[in-house]
Image (cartoon, rainbow, N blue to C red; front, side, top):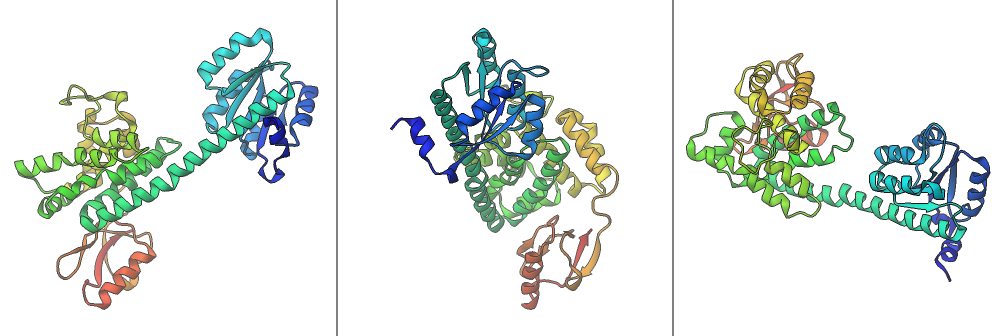
Length: 390
């Protein structure tokens, strides 16, 4: 049995949604009749109508004619690529449009271009292959969003046990990174968030007294500073061993490089060539450190602005826009555990009676955290009173 015949005999439960785009209604009707037994078929009479339809109807594959008024097929599929990168794109062309189609393939990353008239069995086979490609791409993205996230969660959980102060700093930095990613319009910020959470892994090599100095913003001696300077490279090496996180490892490795390149190693990227994750991570990390060293958020932002060459101007501007108006979360106040509520922010590190850090400053309160504190308080291992913001 040929591939097209196999495709036609598959269960309708496994049908994929496709979109056909052509300004000639008769052609659309003919294509729909050929394909409807195998696919859920949507149609549009032009690029603008198709883009509007795609806002409401998820599709796996788009098949577009080349010559259409207002917006030709290559331009339309370029928009699809930008807005819906997982959707596989096929271009239908006449013989006279072959060179334009080749250009579209090279510049727009179109999966196939087919000349008209296209035999039904060829069209069916190519769309079937495109649907399978979409399935593989989608499955890989799900892998990125689940398996890798769980790996990251396991690593950060280990960090929280081994070095609670470093974990708390990673959480605070990640919160600022997430804010900056949203302010900068980053479409898929997960990689930036993962970069922030894993950026402190190398802190497991630091002695507790050095980590405490870093966390509280106290000055380090020469040997301690050398240890701290090695943390990004140690973190990079640990993360680089994880498949699919090469970009995260690179951003972690370059996180201390200045945007203007001053004092950077000869091989280091600079300016726009620096990974975006490195640029955002530097600003977020310096912002967190500054708040532990200076009396106010405004003082920290002023200090960063006075050394503006260290930062991507867009990132620094976004940070000032987010936090330049008023003190973050307001003034701290002391409360009893009974008054602790979700979304408050812990102002001071919470230590057990034997000096072990339980919760790092800057941690956002959740219901499980409250329960954990109550358990320790019931054993008289933590003070009932604490300072919070928000």
